[in-house]
Length: 309
Image 1 (cartoon, rainbow, N blue to C red):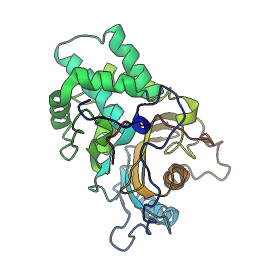
Image 2: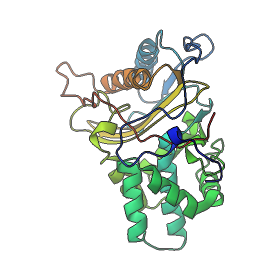
Image 3: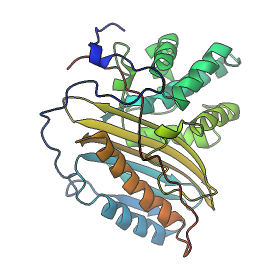
Image 4: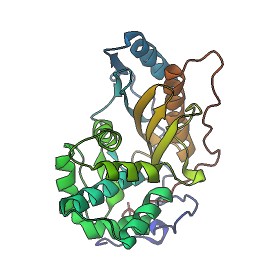
């Protein structure tokens, strides 16, 4: 990396416990999430009543929550979509690792080759353990130019790769993350079927202490693919994000929840899981609900390297 990183901001080893990278003490207290200027909007061509319920319940889940919260949701089965602050930009933290893997597979497809053993090992570590060294190695191998070319192919027009090797400072929004998840979960000309299956396979094998966020409340019998990330900085407090793809019980849906301005990592995790639980419950409103996915009670994520404040 071209910038000097302070000792506190050095990359944690794979699987290490989360640690604060930069001082966040003294950050102004987060304010309620500007509900007056941004509202949840859900639409459905097949089930308009579901859209109304989702709008109501997501809004209720976010009532009095502090910070800035963006939501993207789409269920193919019911043709239902929800959005909140879809164009608001956030530092990506580790959720960009899905984009890195997609870029790697997209680039390999262009030359009709399989991943090497080294690339496969790095990809597995990057997604399942959120290993930063592996991510940095693949980021350097690909180069920002290839990442930008993939983003163009994916029509993720508002995503801006982090500069100076700081992939965790890639700027993302919920709309673009939903475009990425749509490519991962549906047949398209950007990612091959094998590539899509590989990404979902790795996202389905995330280590236990990183299985928090969007899977909260998912019913049993549903396949779960997830990638999370967090990053504390002196401005906007804690960024806490979660991407998820779910299939089962008559539904096939993706969910992106991005947040910043959180007072702690756990506060951001709780906000995301309130949204997730509302959505999963509305999609599977059984009188005797199936056992729902309970995320880890000790959420962790590999800390992302960032420059000093």
